Length: 204
Ligand SMILES: [Ca+2]
Image (cartoon, rainbow, N blue to C red):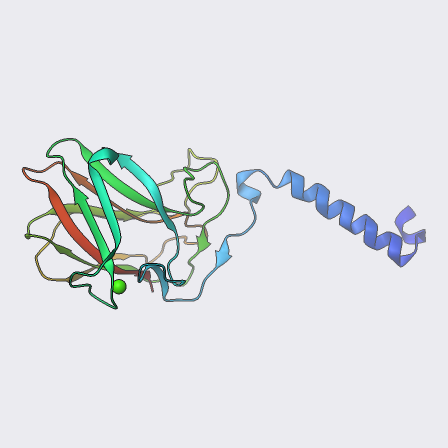
């Protein structure tokens, strides 16, 4: 009631104070700031160093010591001048890399992108020899995390061919309002080192 008697300037200051206090309370996951909206298509990997790239391939999992990634491979890219080259040199154990936003976050920080409207997560892949088995997914942060992904999807145990082939994960009906892990690949150790290539990873 006292606010009504204050000057408009005083009211404005009071509003700012209320906003700040509300901000402190919003540290709870369900009240976290909305994830940034995007324009589709939304690239995860386009070219080395491209401003079109989103998410950061910072989440190295499993046997990372036996894993290599070249994000500027110029050998037969699918589009442009570069593609990703992934190598897993061990024949046992497993490995994978998660594209994260923010980098190195496993669910403790807010962030991510609002991908509402996207119908598919699409990418191109090829194997060095053919028959390499690789799994692909997004949205690996479950509801046990403070700041989780709002949806997940996967195509498991894809057998690659030597030629570029396009794969997709269907997003129909998914809540895409906060996707913090936009892409992930993983391989289990196979009888020989696994080498494969990825390009044009995007939501559209
Ligand atoms: Ca490219």
